[in-house]
Amino acid sequence: MTSEYTVQGHPISELAERFGTPLYLYDGDVLRDVYLSLRERLDPRVDILYSAKANPNVSVCAVLRSLGAGIEVSSLVELVTARRAGAAPEDVIFLGPGKSAEELRACVDQGVHAIVCESFDELEQVNDLRVPGGARVMLRVNPSFESKGARLAMGGKPRQFGMDQDVLLRSRSFLKSLRHVEIIGVHGYMGTRILDAEDVVHNTRGILAAAEELSVELAFDLRTVDVGGGLGVPYFENEKDLDVDLLAAGVNSAVAGFLDRQGDCRVITELGRYLVGWCGTYVVRARYVKESMGEWFVVADGGTNHHMAAVGIGSFVKRNFPVRSLTRYAEPAFRPYNITGPLCTPNDVVAKQVALPEVHAGDLIGVERSGAYGPTASPGLFLGHGFPAEVLVLDGTPHLVRRRDTVEDLLGKQELIPT
Ligand SMILES: *Cc1c(COP(=O)(O)O)cnc(C)c1O
Image 1 (cartoon, rainbow, N blue to C red):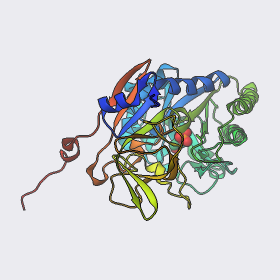
Image 2: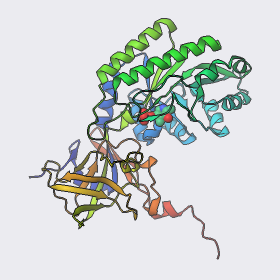
Image 3: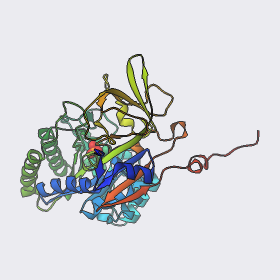
Image 4: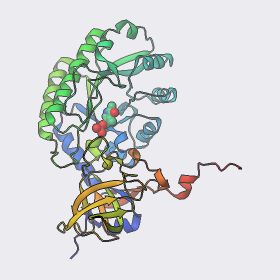
């Protein structure tokens, strides 16, 4: 009897054999289901933009694009990725606190829907580009109200992001002096990993209200409002799924009231983690299993070098992502194990004291709900292990969407000087 994990009918052992480990595995069915179940609940007048930084793989972006999502980008490479994934410029916005001149120029040349400006200096830089008719910008506001529910707050307190609401309200004459800037709206993003629907609704209402106030006080037409998002995925024990029905009902009612007053203003929500977190599994192979002073360790071929989030920086107690034996998926727990990686640091612990079926060398272990902030948010170059392969199973077919780094990928950029 086999109890191994399968993705769309493909046994994990075959996928691991074919593509090697460590491996990020994305299930296209899950990716699609998460997006569509949110899409069908949200008011169709709310555009969903995918925040590429959560998983910037071009094929992942392309799947979401094909379902109708726009893309929110924060670097030149992400902008190029979005275009290659098929996003039309009008469905792309560019944000980030430290855009380069080259990035601003690229936004203008490509005609993105808006540059989300985060400082007065940046507005001047955009103005200096002297775009005929004015470059389209949105003002990123750091609102006066406090964000609720975010594990990591990005607004409502002193932050490098955006411009404080009360300062913006006093800058009408400055904004009027920018002859080559066309202000089309307001952007707000309060923070990430929100799991309570009411908090998302609270933030949405707050940003819509701030946008209306700013458009009146600063005398510009509100043509686009981006209400952020920050929807979370439960990773740890005691965390509950977001209630999407409740969230959609609250957001839809806030948006409906807003649009009654604001006509055909475009409303955007931008989501990263929520859209891609569920679909991904980080797959590692157990190399050695050993006991040390009463605790059992599984030393795997990949660790926190590809999954930095599992380290759990910022919390005092180590909390585990959902970890499963993929080889013995249906078997009952046998004993607690520490799952560690190949790095020579005691911090390279993917999961601590997690109950698993008996683990044998060669078994495959999976860290689930890991499709967001994986390899690209991890120290993949540490100890020269390089980045893992990434595989997307779409409509029953596994595709290698990023090949693993080779020795030459890693060493090719170094120069050996004569000594
Ligand atoms: C990181 C970020 C996002 C995406 O955040 P998630 O929590 O992954 O949805 C969206 N907007 C801004 C401004 C961000 O910085």
